[in-house]
Picture 1: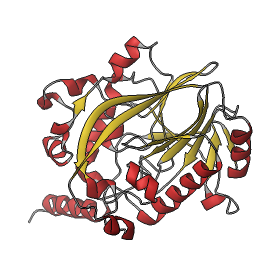
Picture 2: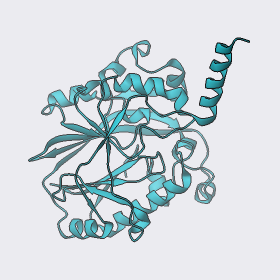
Picture 3: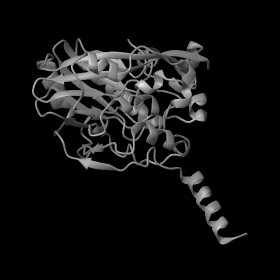
Length: 316
C-alpha cells in the first residue's frame, strides 16, 4: 500500500476517533458588555422588570422530529409518564430585539428563503435532510420576508447554539452582520460534526463573521457557576452561558416593554421537559451539564415573577 493511501486512512481514522468542529469557519474572540453575577442580575430585573427593548417572537416553521432527541426518555419522570419514541410536533423560531439606542438584533435565524425552493437546491446534504426529517418542515415565513416587511436588517445575531435548525435563516442575513456565539461553540469537537460540518458551512456561508463572546471566569459562589454578560451595559439584555446541550449554548434575559423575557434555547426543547425539569435526549451533548444549566434557568424563572419563558421548540 502506498504511503499516500496510508496517510489518508490514518487521517480518516483520526477524525472518526476525535470528531471535528461543527464548522470550519474561524471565529474571533469578542469582548462585549459587562460581566455580572446572578444575584446582581436578579436584583436588577426584579426591581425593574420592564425595559427599553421591543421584543418579538416569530414562528418561522412547523416541524416534527423524534421525541427521543427532544426529551430524555430514560429519565425516571419520562418513564413514569409513559413517554415513548415517535414524532413530536415542534416549531422553529427567531426572536427580534429592538433596542432604542443600539438597534436591532436577532436571536437565532429562522428559515432562509432557499428552503422555500425544491430540496435539491438546499445547502444541506441529502443524508442530513433525511436524518433531520426536513421534508416535514412547513414554513410560515422566511427571515428575509419578515425583515423586509418589518423594518429591515439586524446589526447582529445571537445564536443560542449552532445546530442546523438554529442557523437555517443565515442566508437571508448579510454576511457582514456578525453572529455572536458562546464559548467553544464553533471549535468543540464531536463525532457527529463529521456529518454536519459541510452543511453548516454551506448554510452559514464562507464569509460569515463569527464572534465568540468572552465570558468572565465562573465564580463558584454563583448559582451553578453561571457566567453572565450585561451585553448593552444598561441592564436590558443579559446573555447567559448555559453549557450542556452544546459547549457554547446561551440563554437570554430581556427587559422588554412588555415585561421580562427568558429565551432558553435548546437547554430545554419542550413544554413537558420544562414543566418536569427533564433535559433533552439524544440531541444533547452532555446530559450532566445540560441538567445543571436547566436547573439554573428554572431557578431563575421562579425568582422573577411575571417572566415569560420561551423554550427551544415549543411554547408554554
